[in-house]
Image 1 (cartoon, rainbow, N blue to C red):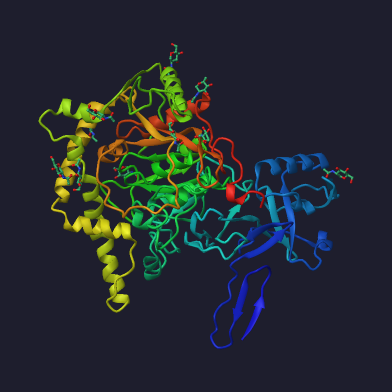
Image 2: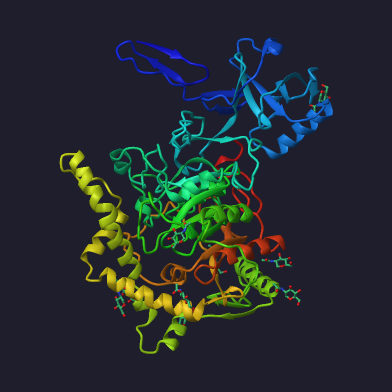
Length: 625
Ligand SMILES: *[C@@H]1O[C@H](CO)[C@@H](O)[C@H](O)[C@H]1NC(C)=O
Ligand SMILES: *[C@@H]1O[C@H](CO)[C@@H](O)[C@H](O)[C@H]1NC(C)=O
Ligand SMILES: *[C@@H]1O[C@H](CO)[C@@H](O)[C@H](O)[C@H]1NC(C)=O
Ligand SMILES: *[C@@H]1O[C@H](CO)[C@@H](O)[C@H](O)[C@H]1NC(C)=O
Ligand SMILES: *[C@@H]1O[C@H](CO)[C@@H](O)[C@H](O)[C@H]1NC(C)=O
Ligand SMILES: *[C@@H]1O[C@H](CO)[C@@H](O)[C@H](O)[C@H]1NC(C)=O
Ligand SMILES: *[C@@H]1O[C@H](CO)[C@@H](O)[C@H](O)[C@H]1NC(C)=O
Ligand SMILES: *[C@@H]1O[C@H](CO)[C@@H](O)[C@H](O)[C@H]1NC(C)=O
Ligand SMILES: *[C@@H]1O[C@H](CO)[C@@H](O)[C@H](O)[C@H]1NC(C)=O
Ligand SMILES: CC(=O)N[C@H]1CO[C@H](CO)[C@@H](O)[C@@H]1O
């Protein structure tokens, strides 16, 4: 048996016992101090007899593709300047050779003090950086980033097999976690057919992607079942629209709510990059929130929200995040927590990319509209500007109120319910155990039972490991006398009331009013290094439960940040301040229209990646690296 080192780092194993086929899984190279991945299939072949001198002992030569008519030195220089600005994959090292499509110019160029060999040919290539080998084969350049915040469970890349499947990226870089590969931003231009061309998206690891294993946050599950044979509908929509799926992202186990650190036994919670870097990420879309907040190179994360799993991570990490109206996109090949409540939501820094991605994912069930309600109800909004966060919240509400020419008034949902339904049980009792009943009694038969049977069959009757939180919730669901029909009836009673009285559908503005509440006030820490009381089932009803129990949309937007004294750093750090907007069921397109308008008028901004959503900056523990 002999071991050969192929081009780059792909180690190929040759055995003379079995006649296994050798397939390239791509190549890794370094250019300067940056690592790149080259997918296994070349994208074009060009004639290299004109530039043989480029190939010494190196396997690959970096090359830049430029589209220009005459291709004078000044054209190349301005293209290079544009590439540096727009693309995180491009660097000056790619100026060693310049491929000018269709041009007859074959002089050499002096670009930024680099003497660049000019190559011409007829091969059609998107502009940007590539690698060329001595056979004339051109490979795409994907930059490798370290997952420093532990947001991913697994990297991935389209397998190139023509069957829509994905495979794990065979690459690593310094950083103690997976490397994630992203293609040059210059390769893809959004079109009507591919509105998400080149948009980089991470997927919560409860959605199947053909060719990859799904973990649902459980190690036994990951190894028990084979790679998925299908791709979940929401993910499929994104892929068809041209999105680049870069990896699977950390989820708390079976999408239940878990708090760092003790609850997270099988996998570690991702790290919230904001503030001191040791605040809880919230769950269950932990990786999606942390990764989107930490990485400039990640545009969007697909999460899921059953009882706050998209909104929580968006609130504590200062991001845009939506719980859509229930049922906007079907959830085949997705692990259920409670089909009655499960929704596919998106997390992003840029509200326009967030909106564009939503339009693709909910296509057929979303229409952007720009006529807005003029009535705003607020739940527990601060009235005294006694903290930085409260001052921001009051100011923001005033801004939105005057932008909409709206009438704003405080709304007490419990009192309103009792006033409208004088003989009914108070909301706090009606809905106290409704969520708990739905998530446990729906997940047990759909997920736990078949899992236990399959695991036992594969492991001589053994039971798989399950984290404390899902275990105790399932146990509660089995021991309670409450039933699913009762839970559905309670939810329906509440939903009908919301739909007729609180957030009622109307033709002109979709929803008769907006409901707003504080997502995060920048004044609440949740350190991940604390020892906590034993977990218990999630009882109770609060402002965050309104959308789940009424099927209505609930969108988080970041508005600022506020200082706190960190017990970790002994220094003032900043936490995000966010706001939730709600409207009638099905009015997701109106909310997206409104948020885009608030953004256009400067009342909302793109969130930054890094330690702060407002000023950016390296994640604290990584500074100076
Ligand atoms: C190019 O080289 C000259 C002379 O070494 C130097 O002064 C100049 O700063 C360099 N320009 C760039 C863009 O690196
Ligand atoms: C739109 O919503 C309906 C109702 O929830 C759902 O059945 C359907 O699959 C959705 N349509 C699309 C195109 O996803
Ligand atoms: C409110 O609007 C004013 C004026 O446009 C602006 O200066 C301020 O930053 C806004 N504040 C918030 C919190 O939106
Ligand atoms: C609010 O009123 C002003 C002045 O009447 C008007 O210009 C503006 O369009 C109105 N805004 C909305 C969102 O209707
Ligand atoms: C709503 O009103 C009730 C009864 O007055 C009060 O106990 C409760 O704290 C109020 N809730 C909110 C969110 O203000
Ligand atoms: C909610 O249910 C839990 C568990 O049964 C119980 O301990 C709690 O008192 C209930 N709260 C209300 C407001 O009914
Ligand atoms: C349903 O509401 C009743 C009160 O009307 C309450 O006693 C019961 O606990 C609720 N059950 C569930 C599952 O929500
Ligand atoms: C809300 O009420 C409208 C009638 O006003 C009805 O068409 C719609 O189905 C209701 N939706 C829900 C979620 O109850
Ligand atoms: C931080 O602590 C210092 C000293 O106790 C105090 O003066 C300051 O107001 C605190 N800052 C915040 C944001 O709480
Ligand atoms: C974590 C934090 O910032 N807590 C502050 C919240 O606001 C109160 C009242 O201003 C302060 O005393 C806390 O320190």
